Image (cartoon, rainbow, N blue to C red; front, side, top):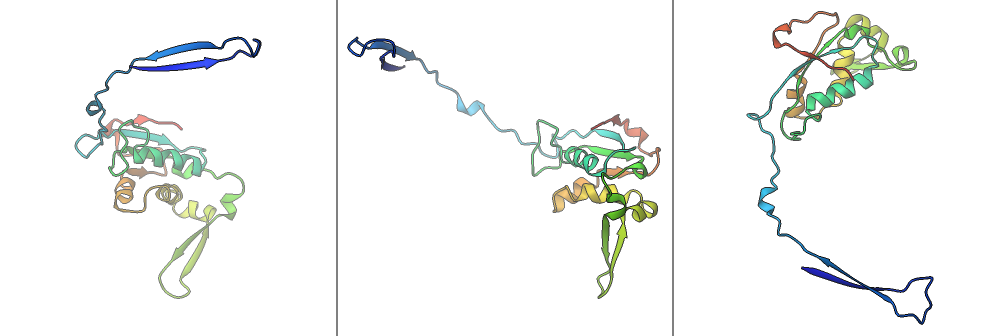
Length: 177
C-alpha cells in the first residue's frame, strides 16, 4: 500500500484560506515477472508460407521494399532478427516493372570483371532487355542483410519474367503491396 498526501491552494481562493488536502491511496499487486518471457523463433517453430506478387506496372524500389520485408519475416509477430523466419515469394511479370522519374534511361548498373579496365556499365533500359529479372533481384538483395542469413533469405525469392511460374504445387497466396 502506498499513500500520497497532497496539499493545494486554489487560485480563486484567498491566500489566507486553509489549503485543500487530498489523500490518494494506491494498492499495488505483486506481479509474477517469470510469466513474461520473450519467445524467440527458431528453425523448428517457423511456419513458412508461399506468396505470389504480380509486378505488372509496379515501381521497382517500392516493390522491392515490400518483398524484402516479407522475406525477412518482419510482418510476423514472431519475428526474430537472427532467424530466417520469412516466407517464400514468387514474383511474376518482372519484365513489366517500371522506375519513377527518368531512371529507366539514366540509372546505371556496374559490373566488374576483376581485371584492370574491366568495369562495364549498362543502363536499366538495356539491362531490362537482356536480363529482365536481374533488376528486381538486385534491388531486393540490396535490402537484405549482408551475411549468411541474408543469402539464405534471398534463396526464397523466385523471380520470373512472364506470367507463369512452376510453383503451383505450393498453393501460393496472392500478395499486394
